[in-house]
Image (cartoon, rainbow, N blue to C red; front, side, top):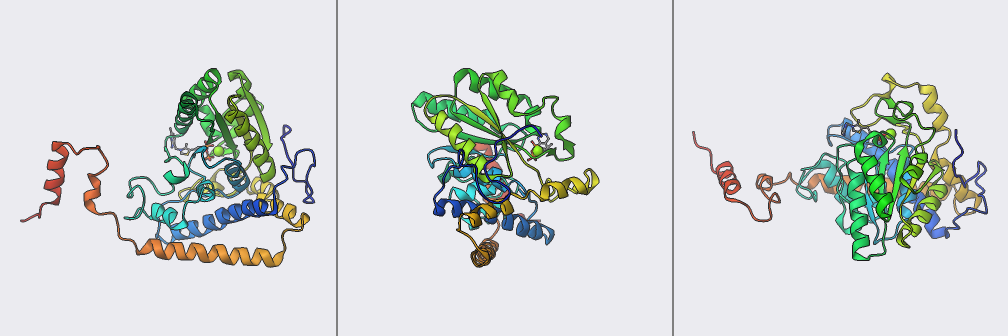
Amino acid sequence: MVDALHIIRDDGSTDPRLDPELSEEDAVRLYRGMSLQRILDNRMLALQRQGRIGFYGPSLGQEAAIVGAAMAMEPEDWIVPQYREPGAALIRGMPLKELLCQLIGNAEDPVHGRQMPCHYVYRKGNYLSISSPVGTQIPHAVGIAWAMRLRGEPHAVLVFFGDGATSTADFHAAMNFAGVFRTPTVFLCNNNQWAISVPVARQTASATLAQKAPAYGFDGVRVDGMDALAVFRATGDAARRAREGHGPTMIEAVTYRLGPHSSSDDPSRYRDESEVALWRARDPIARYRRYLEHAGWWDDGREARLEQEIGDEITRAIQEAERAPPPAVETLFTDVYAEMPDHLRDQRDAFLAPRGR
Ligand SMILES: Cc1ncc(C[n+]2csc(CCOP(=O)(O)OP(=O)(O)O)c2C)c(N)n1
Ligand SMILES: [Mg+2]
């Protein structure tokens, strides 16, 4: 593997030159965020198999690269997600029940069941709605960042995307624009080695994805995506530079998709279990726990309490979300235009009129 920034050593100690020196409170908050995402993923995959939600895309193995990055951003910054980052929305304060309502697509879903499950949005937390076609969110993020510069707002935008997205025209157009106009964008590429069944070796002939950034005139850094402190450090540094007017940075987080692409995928059909086992041994949550223990901030008792607490919170959120009714049929016609045009009003009235025979 080409060298990548890492901070947490195998024994849980850290590289003193690079340690971001989190307080105990923040360090535990990061761990809680990663654990929540892991437990949520397993519960939601089970819920999908029971037919209670239609679809789910887990983040198993990528917890450090998602929650570590989100934690490094300030509340006024924007987060533009791909689709694998519920952990980032939750760090921003999205209530679990609201997330569950989106997965179910019920009346309390902020987008009234119009998006696919997993396509969360959390406006209050500056967390953008998901744009399904691969890579399309990247120019959106650059546009938001450019608008911030024009308005003189000293904030940054973090955009998540995968290794597969680096093959899209949108990625290249966005990187070019960001470089030329020096937009305050942090490009966070989660190189999880796979784009559904296509391995990263089939996406690019470059030795790394990070090395694409200098071609657009800015820095690309490669970090160990299984190391939450390394991701936190690199993202925090990039966001600070962006806010101070020094332009964009691309971060390649080298990680692995331990689970299926989504609940519709069976990875055993295209990849070897021995590869998965190799990466499972680098589990980002186990590694971060060793760091917490080394610092004297964690033990089996705290772990057991945390698991219980998160499990109960998820159970409560499922129960509450499942009580909400489906969206009312008339919501099919609302929110399409600011003012409903006549033809749509006619269609709505015809649709809602009692149907006699
Ligand atoms: C334009 C487009 N083509 C195909 C798809 C189907 N699709 C959804 S995710 C995905 C793979 C994306 O891989 P990557 O960017 O590496 O992200 P990852 O899923 O690994 O996180 C594909 C092909 C799509 N959503 N949009
Ligand atoms: Mg991928």
